[in-house]
Length: 114
Image (cartoon, rainbow, N blue to C red; front, side, top):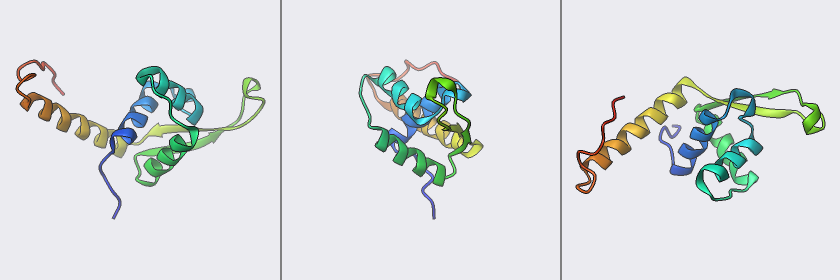
């Protein structure tokens, strides 16, 4: 049986894919966006392993696109979040917001509707 939950790093990688424009959601740009958003670096190998795992779980799909002159003609694998992936992301967000709402220091400070 496949795991249907997201680890924290998996969740952040999926969010990076969602943030990037469709043409830019390839591994190198995902790693750049991760660093830009978090201030932390991640190896391209760790990103590839996570992207492969998320695709195996059915949360992502990918396709090879032809390369551009700026990349020396090299092809790139573009990632997109599947309907299942969007559902799992939403469930993860809702679960975390529910926990934050129960934390006394933050209780009553969330005005979010989903």
